[in-house]
Image (cartoon, rainbow, N blue to C red):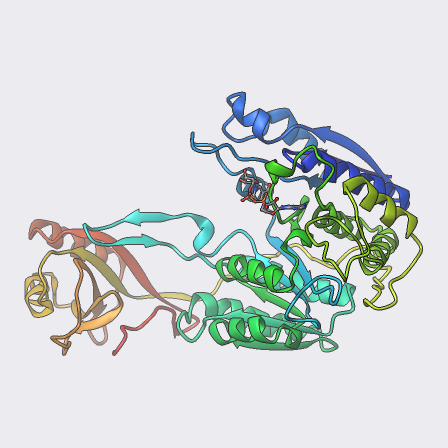
Length: 478
Ligand code: NAD
């Protein structure tokens, strides 16, 4: 028996949660439920996070959380409970299966059956942003080796557990050679440990285009946070079934399962809503807690019900559907199909192995690190890079000198183009002279001279080589 935490949420939440729990219990799920209150009532009672402290204790104790959609009140500084939960609990993997149910649910892609595995904590979503000059703001894109290893391994382990044949990686590493480059590199390393699973990498732009056009060419797709956020919605939409998709948010200790849709307040309390999205989340939960046989039974009964044409209003279509039913009646139909399998749609068969093999990340031996230079970022309202280079000459010494200036990454000095548009944000690269070794003292000295000469330094970035390999971007055009 596994204790889980359940939140019935707002709007249609309570109805679809009751339907979901009734189905999985009837299928033999070995669960006990602790219910907590989250969402609108909690927000309006003055708690801007939408959840009380005691509820966190319950979630952390049970480690498995099935959550119905909630209503986030408009305005008023309320924080998204989803984002908070993901971050607090370290839910690093977001898993969203997107499968077409052709011909029972309309889609342009009858063969589509993909799973998006999205990294959930890092990338541009670390939320580290700064305004640096009048004209320029920045957002730090952080990609870590543990983050990449955890998500890529999750994708391969998931493929293994669910009998999937291929894992595809999407990145933009032709442009972001360090960040997306690391994600791709880790993908290649870990793929080698799974020779029985095919692997491939696509540049995200053409990969996304291909996915939207020919999704049947893909199976499991793993990607960094931002791309995954966008493409998991695209995938759910083109499968024809945003209202039918569920998602899992998985961490090393805790996990949260939900539908991808919202609380649909206009449909609340009318026994109209489709419980399928939350049910899909619950099926992922059952597999996650080692009750794969129950998960398989529920999924096959659900497929059979869809195939029988027993549809809620949102997917009901004259000529295709047989009967328009409410939330409760739909749940009853799924329950009466427990033990049955679909005959047209593909029945599922999950591995009985209870849990994925996800070793904790262990820190590697430290790399040999060498300081090769420094980028000093300057706020300067001029437009001529030659003039700025001239102004910075005072910072040169017998050991360190200015070697390059870029503006928005494009080299503008030496030998820039007059045509290049420049903002007030300049990256000025200083390197040691031939035979000299740069130290932090040099950087401090550079900043002292800058300050004494009214050069407005806004930040510095050290330039390192790891294991003898320079690990920073060149100027475009350098
Ligand atoms: P929504 O997903 O609630 O509704 C979009 C449309 O889909 C509506 O027409 C709705 O009636 C329909 N719909 C959604 N789920 C359905 C279901 N199960 N069965 C039948 N029809 C369904 O999106 P929205 O209207 O933009 O948001 C409503 C509220 O939900 C907002 O407060 C929003 O913040 C919240 N929301 C919560 C979550 C979450 O808790 N994970 C996610 C998205 C939105």
